[in-house]
Image (cartoon, rainbow, N blue to C red; front, side, top):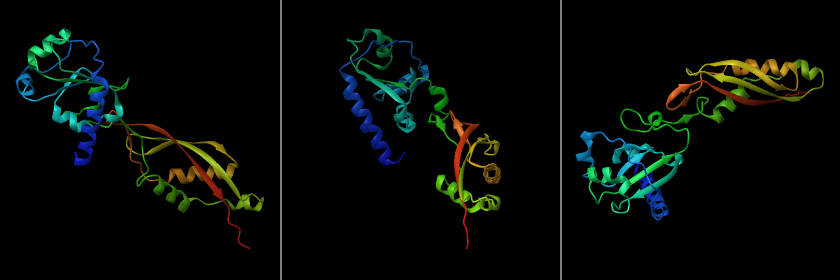
Length: 223
């Protein structure tokens, strides 16, 4: 993790520490920690649990889950929190615990890889090079139908939906709105000629996504 990102993590965790320190909720002691890691973990403070799952402090710093955090509860007083007696017995009476709760629907098993690092919980598919590159591709490849110019029509727009498959290919290209059939046909041609997209991901796994774009057409009349 870059120094600036690491500083951001520490700064935000420290802020949340202050906010939640004065209101310590009752916590369940049914938290899982590998037995062979207790001795090693007890050498470091604080001890982190994300969605009731133990996370190594160094891995926690690399997880980058700030946007998914709902609450952080800090508990460090064994006498005032007898419901956590088993944890204090394992790590020591003076141990500090940080319990991190993520947004509903986010499964920690889906966002933490085997190396303990965070996987992207969700990433939408993207045209290679981003939105600007996509707009440039459309501008370069679209052609205004001459048949419409003959009818006195000089502009129009088309709304197109399509599925970006898990391998980046496009399928199910459909026109949902169009000002003229000729423009609809041209929009489908342009989208079908797009290169493979960067596929989207759910819980770090490439997945199919439906996307929608609007294509504006303007005819050029040379006199």
